[in-house]
Every structure is written in structure tokens, then in C-alpha cells.
Image (cartoon, rainbow, N blue to C red; front, top):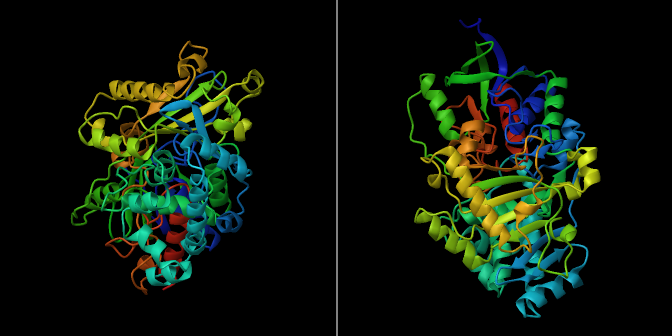
Amino acid sequence: MTSSVSTYDAVIVGGGHNGLVAAAYLSRAGRSVLVLERLPGVGGAAVSESPWPGVAARLSRYSYLVSLLPERLIGDLGLRVELRRRRISSYTPDPADPSRGILVDTADAAATARSVTRVTGDPDEAARYAALSTRLAPLARAVFPTMTEPLPTASALRESTGDDALWHAVTAAPLGTLIRESLATDITRGIALTDGLIGTFATADDPALSQNRCFLYHVIGGGTGYWDVPVGGMGRVSAELERAARDAGAEIRTDAAVTSVSPDGEVRYAGSDPGVAHGRVVLSGVGPAALEHLLEQGGAASADVVRPEGAQVKVNMLLSRLPRLHDDAVAPEAAFAGTFHVNETMTQLDRAYTEAVAGRIPDPLPAEIYCHSLTDPTILGPELRAAGAQTLTLFGLQVPHRLVADADAVAARAELLAAAQRSLNGVLAEPIADCILTAPDGAPCIEARTTADLEHTLGMTGGNIFHGDLSWPWADDADDDPARRWGVGTRHPRVLVCGSAARRGGAVSGIGGQNAAMAALEILAR
């Protein structure tokens, strides 16, 4: 049985971080808001969890870094979060000779230059790498401030960057062209290209430019492109957003799985306390394919929606200590403090794509590693910290969902985990297995989360972390319709997108939720 219909100004489908942002903004504006979350807790992918019983480690199990969360949003909602910047940008061991690697130290340009020269043998490559970053900076400064405003036009942004050639290189030509014209070596080209392939299945020269859009979102974060570590893990960010929403008056129901949405705002949900709610507007934090299914269940005509495909595997580890490197010139505490690139030269990244298209897990698997506990030790319990334990997160690239979609889940995890370990072992001075902590029950503290796991656990269709292809964060022309002007519209006027599928969604930013709230307030004021 269901309860009687309750009416709200806004009903939000999904209590991920964007849904919580929207709820907080709308409630602070005096609007009645109901958030419906299928899982027992809110946060979606932005959560901290303890995967191993009896082990006092709170890991950012899914999403793991913050780049696009605007200071303005933090201030507007009064969020008590601390974001720490990492001094080391990246370390990249040379796959051909792991006894040397490129360490990019944001506080020591001279040391970075020596590192690049040592690995590439080209005394001018470090200057080229720095010049590319310098050239991209005006683009970041022009685009990022517009992310929490109505969509700017492409022409206005192009003019504000002051570099028409760069605008064309980023938005009209495949990213590989810009990278090859800017950098001369395969290893530095790979360092640049990885920013275009996080969760995106593409080559450097893909004419669809999905790698370009992903690259743009990475380099504009915060107006600087820096990626920060939230103290307390991603769960701290979501906990603060939940607090802000509840303090403002939002009603949040967990264990409430939405079963249908009608275009006129009726939302039905199941769970321990099923019911029906009606929203003057409905904000969707789920992906387009999931939303379309809910709309069909609510009586809307069916529409063709492209099923998105994720392209990554995430491996969470807890180590008794950091592994040794072949490179005696770099301490592990420095190498693992930033982004540790594993088998990610430009050639390797493109070859991995070709292997995946052929139906094989890439070998070696391109991957990036982060040690969050070096930046934020609070995610570990006192005993683990005293013993020198560290977390390690590996994010494998070029692993499309098609490789695991129809496979046995346990076998797929095991195969990808083995591939990740083989790749990592190829650049370390000892097997990573020798450093993995053992839980009280005897199990090794290591797990793989595949795209199938994301689909099953978090409801992300195809395991796509962006809910689909990223969009350019601008419009071709100005628009008077609130939903389209803010980049959150659907084919139904009263149904808005507030999650990663929004025009400027993707990553842990809250931008999709903020923009949907702004559009909803305009609609509700009419």
C-alpha cells in the first residue's frame, strides 16, 4: 500500500552529492523539498566506507578527488570542508626503464626540469611542458567562473580566452594534435593525454572529441586545474551537504527507491515506507537512461536514449607500507603523494584502446595511483597510522564496460585485479602484494570495483561515472528558457537534470545540482 500524495515544490530523485546540493539551495530559498534515495545512506559515489571488517580505514571507495567544487558553493551552503592541495602533481616512471621517472613538483620548477631532462634526454622538453600549462591557464580562468552562471555562448568564451588557435585546438580538432604539437616525447605526451581519458574511452585522435571534453574539465578545475584531497574523505563532503540540506529544511528519505516519474511531477517510490509525492518540479540525479525508464513507468512516451558505457576499473588497497621504487632519486613518499602514472605513455594509451576494442583487457593496463593517506592521515585509525600503513587507490583506464558486462562478476573482478597488479609490478621494485595489509579475518586488503559494480551498486548505467558523454560547458546561442539556459533541461518542462548528466555535470563538483536549483527557482517563481 502507498500513502496519500504529498506535494512539494521540488522532488529530487537521488541523494547523490548533486541532489543534496540542489536540495540545500532550494530549501535555503524557502522551497519545500523532498529527496528520495534508494540506498540506506546518501552521497552516491561520494562516500567513505570501510571495505574490510575490523580494519580502521575509511576509504573514498568510488570518487576520490575534488577539482570542480566551487568556493562559491562552499560559501553559499556554509560547508565545513577542508580541501588539501598536493605539492607533487605527478610521478611517471619510464616504462622502458623504471629506474628513472618524471617528478612534477609544483613548488620546484628547476627540479621538475631536471627530472624531465633525465628521462627524455631532451633539455627543452620541460620548457615545452611548462609552456603548455601556461597556454591553457587563460582557458581555465575564462571557463571556470561561468560554471555556476547561465550557460555562456561559445563565441563569448572564445573571445575571452584571447587565443583563437588554442580554442580551435581544444574544441574543434582531436586532442592528439595539440599534444603532439606542444610536446616532443611519448612519455610527456602521455602525461598530458591522461587528463582526457579519465572514465572516457577514446584515443588521442578520436574525431568525436570525447577526450577533448574530458581534458577541458580536468584543466579548468578551480580555475587552475589542481585536484584536491578532501580531509576525511569524500564522505565528509557528502555529510556536510546532507547537513546543509537538512538544516535548511529539506526532507531526505533513504531506502526510498523511485519506481516512476510522470512528466507532470508525480513520483512513486518503494522501500520500507513507500509512497507517492508530487513535485511542481522534479530534479533527476540519475542518468538519462535510468530517468527515461522512470518516465516510461510514469506514462511518458518512450524516447531513444544512448546507453552510456564507462571505461575504468578502480582498485582500493591498504598497505602496511609504501612499495619500493627502482628510482633511487625519488622517495616513495614523494612519488605516491601526487598522481603516479603507470604505463601511460601516449603510445601505450592508444594501444590499450585498440586492445580493448578487440575484446581484450589491455596489457599492460594503463593506470593512475593516488595515496590519499599521505595528504590526509585522518582516514586511517591511530594504530594504522602508528604502524606506517598507507592507502593506495588505482584507477585503470581503457577498460570499457563491454569487457565485463556479460561476464561472471567475481571472475571479472579477479581478472582486472590481476591485470592492475601486473601493470603496477612492472614499474615497482617489489610486488605490490608484498605490501598489502592483511585484515583480521586473513583476507588481503585489496578490492576491485568494476563498471558492473558501479551499475549494480550505485545505479550508474554502464558504470559510466559521468552518466554519459561530457558536454561542452557553453551554448551555441543565448536562450530564455530557464532549464536550457542553465543546461539542465529534458524533453519535459517540469523535469530537470541535477546530476552528472547536466550540461556541466561530471566529477564531484555540485555544479549540476546548483544549476538545476537556479533553474527550478526561476520556474517556480512563474
